[in-house]
Every structure is written in C-alpha cells, then in structure tokens.
Image 1 (cartoon, rainbow, N blue to C red):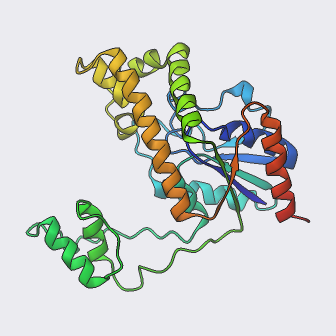
Image 2: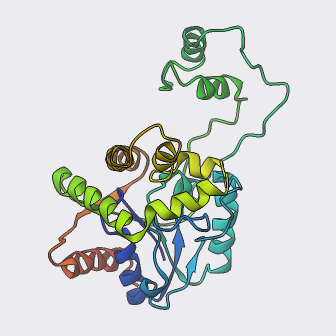
Length: 287
C-alpha cells in the first residue's frame, strides 16, 4: 500500500503521517524538496527525532546544502525505496507535488541535447506564437521563456500523457483560508522562538550561497536581513507572506495535477481527522 499525505504548509501532514505509519506498520518517505538538506531543520519544519516514534524515515537529511538535489535525483532515490520496500506499506509525506509525480508517475526527463535550438534571436512573444503553432492547446505562460524553449525542442514521442506507475492514495489535508493563514503566521513566530534566525545565520556566516538556501522560504528572507537590505521585522513578515503564497500555489498544483481526496482538519480534536482518514484508507484497501 502506498499513501501520499499532501496539502499546504502548516496543516498537519507530519503528525498524520506518523499516526498512520503506526496504524499500518509503514515506513515514511519525505516528499518535501527542502527537507532533504542537512541542517535546514527549523525553517523547513522538519520532523524532530522525538516525533518519529521509532518509525523509519527516509530521504530526510540526505545531502549537504551546498549540493543541488534535483527532481531527477529524488526520482532515483524514491524508486530505490519503492523497489526495496515493495512488500511493505509506504507513506510519502510532503508538499512538493512534483517530487511525488516524478516518483510515482512515468515522469520522463529529457536529455539536454547540445544541438537544441536556443532561440536567442526570438522574443518571448515570438516563442509563444511558435509554441501555439506546434500545439494550440499548450498552456505555458508567455513569460516562461525556459519552458517555451524546452517545449519547442521536444521531439516527437516525448510528450506522452503522464500516467501513474504505482497504485497510490493521495490524501490531502485542508482547512479554511483564515485558519490556515493564522496557523502559518503563528508557526513562523514559533520558528523564530526555536532559533530560525540563528540557524540561517550559521549558513550565512559560512558564505554558503547554494540554490537551496537562496530559494527556501525562511532562509532567503533572512539572508536579505543579514545583508542589511531589510529589517528583522520585515524579514519575518516576508516569510509569513511568502509562506501563505506558497500554500496557495500548493493547493492549485495538487488540484490540477493529482487525484487528491481532501479532508478538513479538526485542529481541536485531531484524532477525529485521523479516524476519518483511516476509514477512507480501509475502504479503499479492504484486503
């Protein structure tokens, strides 16, 4: 049995994954793009050792922040686990939908061909028109130059429909926007109480300017503060704002890309949510 616990940041995915792992004797696999990095703990809300409750956890803390761990890397590592534990229940947990798609679907990575056309002489508008000529149903934004060029360079046979390779249940946790945004704001405050500023400053003092730290919410904003571009309070508010925007993008991605069964979280009695999800799982895996 493969379960995927998805949803926006701050909604309780980690807690649910541990409870379900205990119930179904499962292992847990990380599906968060930033939790693969060692040392990025507070800012990514990474599960603490005492919260794991002796459940085996995989693909957490597997690479240094100086490295660039890609979706392709994740696909290879996740499929190794899927093969090694094919006779065991597996729970993926995280909000990086593309990682799950790469692991569980026939997600194909195109080889970079040096003979590909770079289209340096064309404007975005011209690229967009060419892409529409190739496929009038393509939905790439006119300003996404990189994707437009990749689309135009795709060869025949590289545009097959993406379909699942494994049977998996996608369980999404959700709540109304006001509650979610309030939880996100309060969680950021808690991160600062737990030492987020110190965690980020340690990386800053080591002069690490990796892709992970320059793109991860909670670190990129504090780096601006350390550089003197903004105040600490402005950094904190920016982290909250970017986290809220990220949650909105997560909803959009999962609703458009995957068949997710959504459950409203009862934060006053989380056990009710656990029971509701377990009933859903049992009804789909009656064996």
